Structure formats: structure tokens, C-alpha cells
Image (tube, rainbow, N blue to C red; front, side, top):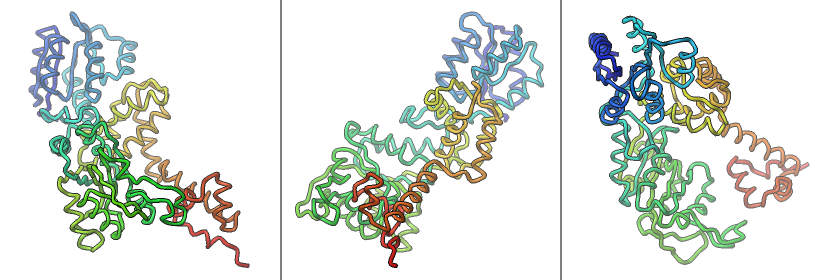
Length: 448
């Protein structure tokens, strides 16, 4: 990968010149540092794609340098050279996450081969794009993603409605939460609702609330999400799936900044910032007359489009390491890093489920891993299982829930009261479950 920036570190001036010459001749942009301390100063000013460092140096040694780099830039590969190498040292270093271990005197061809392999698993670096406006909440090195985040940061402090578009799993809710956290509303509620997951007559009640007796099953007043999010942010996820009849009512709420709970007479003032998200093409939905054009322009004051993971592959090592560091403690595992083969499998795979799918893969890998370094075989096995059509946990749970409800209705001959009692749920909640799974109790009654 010619033209890539490499930081070389050695307190031997002659060797530093030789490394510089070899790597520069191969077409790389080389930065040289004569100590680990100098390397850290350089690293604070510019971001290389690879570090090649001596092990034994005056002051901070190569492994201590690696520890700092691994903690602050987890996706950045490090190759360590030493004249004092041994197999136990190499094993210990790779277990800690060091990419490669080269014995001095370093053979030029071996060096270039190791560098080429490391660069294949390292995220390409664009100057100035290693930090994001939202800190650790969202990590990226992708120029398109960075542009989206910069725009999001500019509008975070205002109150303009924001429409976030992107494929499922690209992180639309994560971005919405980051915008809320960066806004002047950060100390007020952030509430999210999936508009496509709730039946129409229940969605209206969830959004706007209802009063006691407004409909069958309304046994008490219910505060809607617009009121619950007052002063804060409401995320309307999958807004493209909202029924047309509700779109009219939502438009009125956004225009008047007031809600009328179902069955109520009085209007209630609200102060809510609305962020909406969708994986659908809303302009196409407008042409098909299933989405209101006036609502679209009310929601789309600021538009943010998240790229798919396949279009930001340079972020895969960074995200994988982020998920590893997050999930390993949860599973009480001491896993430090990925092997080069593991990263290569991740980077070259397709990701139809985007970042959500990547996190799911890393969680499975962590759960199954028995070593401190994730092997290529472990990643390959999990990816193969996904390719065989293994359902996600959420899909499996929905399937079980539907089968369970069907079984209850069969046992009770379609009696909702008896079925709810067996399930230890109240009737209202049980009706919601039936609506969610599109089950009609009447179809289970025995008419014989």
C-alpha cells in the first residue's frame, strides 16, 4: 500500500536511517522518532497507519510505547523489532496485541512483507479525521462519516428538526443520542420510539397519550411520549413506517407545539426537539402517496445521511476493537486484540446488517474466545454461521413470543382474559402483544 504514513522509532540513528531508506524506497511516507517519548509527541500531532519500533531503548521501551498506543489508538498496528528476541518474548508481545515481532538484523524483504500485511488490516488515515466532534461516542476515520458528524455537531445546539437516513444498523439512534448529549437539552429526557413496531391505534396513544375511558382498556390516564420527553429530545425511529392517518396528527403537533391526548378536550403545550430516522426513501414514499410531503419538509429541516459499513471499511478495525473492549469485561474475558487474520476476515466480509451486525459478530466471538487474542479461525467460524442464516437474538425472541401466544390462545379457546391470566399479564398489555404479532383471538375459538 504505497503512500501510507509509517512512524519508525529507534534510538540507533544508523538503523533509523536504514529503515527510513527501505520504507521510503517502497513508496511510503515515513516519520522518524529517536525515542518512544518523541514518538508520542509525533503521534499527538499526526496519525500514521503503522508504527515500527525498537524494543530496547533508553527511557520508555517499545512495549511501554505499545501499551500507550494500544490504549489511546486501539486500531493502530505496532511492529516491534529487537536484537534480544526470543520465542517467549514474541508470544508475550503478540498476546498483548502487538501486530508483529521482528528479530534484528531485520531482513529487508521480511520487513516489507510484514509492513504490507499490517497495512492491509489497518484503517487508512486521512489527516485530521482521527477525532470526531462527539468524542468516543462515535468513532470513525471515514471522510464521508466525518462530514456527517461535523454537520451534526454544528446543528446539535439548535432546535431544528433533524432527519437521519441510512440503512438498518448504520447507527441512526446512536447519532441521535450523541446529538442530544451535545445539545442544551442534554440534562432532559431522550426518548426513542420505533414507529413501525407498534399498531396504529396504539401508536397514537403512545405518542400523544390518552385519558381514562378514551377506548376499551384505557383504565387510567396515560402520558404520551411527547409529554414524557418535554424539554428534551424525541426520536421517531422508522418514521417512514408511520400510517398516513397519524402523519396528519403528527404534522399538527409539530406545527402547533401542542398535543391532545386521545379522548381529551384540552391541548397540552410541549417543548420537544424531534429527530426522525428512517431506512426508507421518503421521496419515493411521497411519490407513492404513502408519506406526506408537508410532513417530510417539516421533519427534514436538517438532513443527515449515514453511509453503510461497506462504504466505510476503514472503520471496521476501529469499531471491532471498540466493541471488543466494551464486551470482553461483560463476559469476564481477558481478550486484548485481534490477530491479523481476524482483522482481515472482518475487513473483507460483507456487512448487510452494518455496524449492528459487526457488533453482533464481535459479541459472539468474545463469548466463544478462549485466548487473549482473537484468532482468524474464531472470526471465520462466526461469520460462516451467520452466512448459514442463524437468526439474531431479537428474531429468535419474537418467534418464541409469537409461538407462546398462539399456544396460550389455543389452550384457552381464544379467551384473552384466561390467556392473560396464564401469562401473568394484564389484559391491556396482552392485547398489545397480540396486536404486535397480528393475532386475532377470535380465530382460536372453537365454534363446534
